[in-house]
Image (cartoon, rainbow, N blue to C red; front, side, top):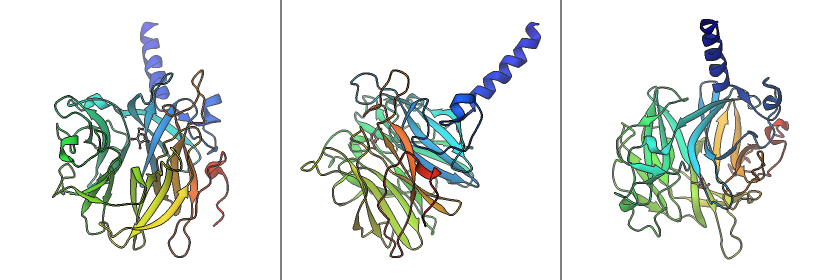
Length: 338
Ligand code: FUB
């Protein structure tokens, strides 16, 4: 009997590790076409970072675990996948901060990219006392599903590399981009917006850390290209008006600028002063991912440290500008209007 039970238990465990999730799927375990917001309702998730590989969209998120008035307690990064923007599969954790031996905590915002069949995961963590402050690590995997392992054994960017920063958490929120000429770029920053070229190995900076000025820049940069235009989307804030972040963007004719401010594309998140953009083209359509603080899971209400990722259609006008986005409960289950 024991020999019969063992394979059955193993099969059940495997099925649980990769079960489809989503509003309707979580209630009966059957994947259904239901892409309403927020996307995942069985746990709190933040800082969505989409990556398209072939016919699949992978979404990396931080797992928000704050309790009570804790600001953030983000213990691991999770990945989800979809092939149709309607049915999502949870694949569980891809990494945790302490998988970087030099880091102590805080699975803050991340982004992954593919190069030459390998997947590089750039992410924010708290460095240990040898380089106090937030830092950016890079990890690598043969699969977008991970697991990811530290690619360097040290931080790619640590707080002491940006002494001009106004505080110890200015080195957060990496966005990574490979240009048409093959050059790779890392951009990041809180309060200050930093960027640097990456070496072809993707795990070393190639030259100095540079800085650009962007109106009301706060954090969460996301770089993408459409046609000939480079888009830099970011969380912006004008504290004389509100503590809440909005999403603004700038465009440029090259990856290094000069950046022209193009305005705001999203208002603040419900019940969370942070909002964080992730933009991607998937199967010919464009999507805007973000998070808000409106989801209750069990006895844990939503809020600053208990966020929930969501997605909306994104549309461009003929002049390349982005049509301002409204946050909806229907999300991309609404038909596209353009
Ligand atoms: O999730 C922790 C931090 O909150 C991120 O790094 C910021 O972008 C903000 O979303």
